[in-house]
Amino acid sequence: MKTKLTIITLFLSLFTLHAQNTYTSKVLDSLSQKPIEYASIFFNSKNGVITNANGEFNITIKQTIKPTDSLVISCLGYEEKRIALLNFNEDIIYLQQKVVDLSEVVITNKEYTVDEIIEKIKEGFATNYHTNYAKRKLFFRESYYTELDKGEVNLKKSTIPEFNQKLIDSLIDLAPKNTSSHTELLGELYGKVEANQPQKMEVLKAARLYDKTADINFENYEKRFNEIFRKYIKRDSYFKIKSGWFSTKEEIDSSLFGDEKKQENKATEVLVAQQKKRDSIRKVNFLKYRKANIHKLENDNFIDEDNDLNFIHKSNRYEFEILDYAFINDNFAYVIAFKPKRREDWSGTMYVDTEDFAIVRLDYKNVKPLRKFGLLGISLKEYLKEGTMIFQKNDNEKYSLKYMDETFGQQVGIKRPIKIVEKNKNVKGRRKQNELNGDFHFIVKNIEKIELIVFETNLIAETDFKNFKENPKVKPTYLSKYDPEFWKGYNIIEPNQIIRDFKAIEN
Image 1 (cartoon, rainbow, N blue to C red):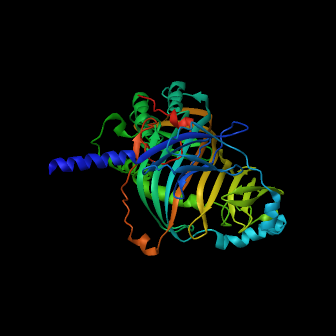
Image 2: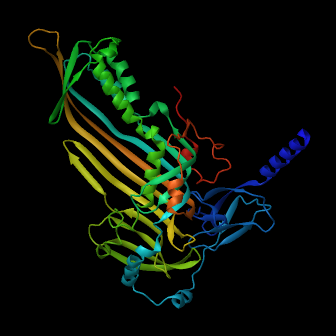
């Protein structure tokens, strides 16, 4: 009996291995030889991926391949292509540009003006897009890039020996000049698609790719500052720090010098613990933070007039022009460009289905900073927001988000004078000991890039949502360098070269 079970187990294992096949290739334009991004690669209606910016894709099919099975490659403006899977060996797949017969488009619809099309788009917001309960199987990637554009401290006067250029240089060196981190998540999101609705998520697999030594948080800075202060600062001093209009009193924590048992340290320890707790919220509440973030992305579009991307709702402030017709999702689409008439934010191109007037694809970019702020030497500028959204019909003939690629850029600056006065609480009479004057100027650029692909959107009932139990304690796997084996056998968006080359710096 044991021998029979062993044979059966071996047979099933061999069948399972045989039933999982992975296909990797690159999609190029047959004429220009350039990569085609956002091309859809499908095995069936619920098993597909999208090419990255380099035209690359990787798709895993977990079933036995039959002679009749094939991959379907399609993209806006190109002829659809089918490739048999049984002996797949295509390192490069070429797509030919599709020529649209305008007479076919005219037959399907009357000739609408661009203003009439815009009004029909608005009318369709309530009926064209799915907002009810659904389960969305998805892959999400978020990358953060931080670059220190400027870090200058001009020391004009200092009578404090401990606060010399060496110390200042040490403090400046604490901040990494260039850092990046990447979060990847494969999961299933449950709930109403409409904005501000509660969501539940099952995280199937997740990873965080970052350098722990360059992680900007309170615990890292506390450790580094302590090492410097123990070396340079007297234990009975405190400092009055003034920058601009505000001043603060900074006591030198006695725990810096190893006096852990003193009673006065208790309050400081409580404050430090609270700060560390705040710094770890994003990591501890990974599930809560990520599902809220992804759900917000689903609704960060042109449908809701309260969103930034409200060029349709404010159509009287934009110029629209029908550029051409295209073939997308087996239907014809108007290709309409838009730009602001005066001081609005956006320009881009939208693709509008000629039958139901739904926007099925949108390419957008801001034409001026979205927000600017400056006060007391502190400045903030949101200078970049650009991306692409692609929508696809569900089984109920309503559209939902299929793919989103967005880049957001922000610049933060601090330019202020600074004055530091050292006082000593154990000195009788005049407590002022020393003084430092100078100014500093820092500019940090932050780039956030997100990618979201929804493999399946299945309609569910409210009871399905309520009955689903999530694991709130799920955590991502920490990776110090890119590991191509981590996502092997899973369908994801192929990473860019920056992610592939990522490696944490060893201490």
